Amino acid sequence: MTISAPDETPSRAMRREETARLLQEASTATGKQRDELIDQVIVLNIGVAHAIAHRYRNRSVPVEDLEQVACMALVRAAQKFDVDQNRDFLTYAVPTISGEIKRHFRDQGWTIRPPRRVQEIQSKVIHAYHRGEEHGAPPSADRIAAQLDLPVSDVSEALQAEGCFRPVSLDVPVTEDGRPAIDQLTSEDDADERALEARLLVGPALRLLSERDRKILHMRFVEDRTQQEIGDALGVTQMQASRLLKRILDQLRSELGADAVPA
Image (cartoon, rainbow, N blue to C red):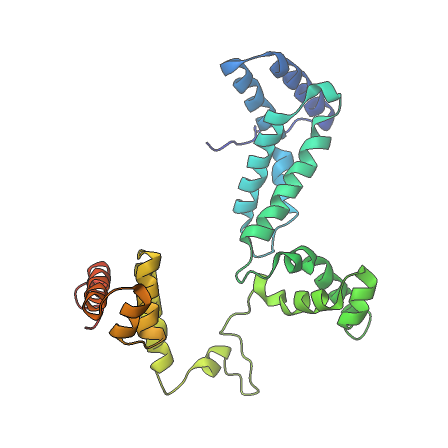
């Protein structure tokens, strides 16, 4: 369900008073009546959720996604708010909404996900780095670590992870003659490309196999064991190992198409 704000935005005082009244009524209501009162609270304060979401715009996450996260957090805040604590609703809702947006960045915004400890400090480290750039030479990892009271190793990882959240396009020129980065990744030998295509093709089908079947394939095609050696490892005969391999390959062919997996 999409919740939209009313055409006329109420003043802060009016919104606060009306929100408090609705929440007070909701605290003693049940069923559909309570749901309707909470919905009115959400509509009344949805502009606040949108405003918080827009604070985080232009950070590689679409603002529409941030608005959705903010609105969902507002819904949860309205449903869980305890009027007995005698405090303004937004003093509870705003930190809740901000926290959900930050969690969304942490969990969903990374193209390449670094360790959690690096995610948690990366924003502070990059901010300190660019702040140092504005006042002269970029600060070293040792200097940033001292400023933020963090381990130097973690700061170094956070600096290296800057591109993980907003990767640089492969079309960006990286050479003196203006050639893009993607040109530096190509090779006359297409073996790597073919290997990558094979992994992308076979990977999903392999995940459908049982752990035992994947182990058998690993022994045969990664460890290069003979059928007899596989049979010995599994406690079966060479003939049984051969039949197991045939069944597994037949299953892969069925998943990928008759001609996808060579004999």
